[in-house]
Image (tube, rainbow, N blue to C red; front, top):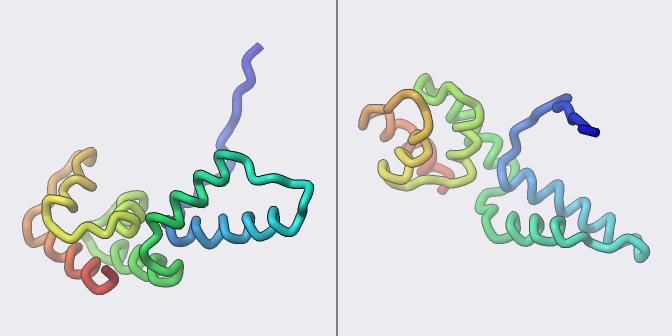
Length: 119
């Protein structure tokens, strides 16, 4: 017997937004003594605590600015850039490594200038 699961909805989140959501879950679980924090949830909370650099509002603004650029067309790429906050062309090229297109130096600099405002 095979059980198929269907994706009903998909929404991209930055690490900062995820941290905010997981903090709410953690507080809810801490309030109820009968519910314990599962290993996976504890590891996810630890991960976002370690790697979330920006505040959720800042990360949303950064994604919005990146999507406003003509260079960043894919929403998932904008969220990845907001999570990684690349500082050099080499780091930024790594984000675009799996894309079917390559960016010029000027286009990379345009993205890095936006990221520099938040990093």
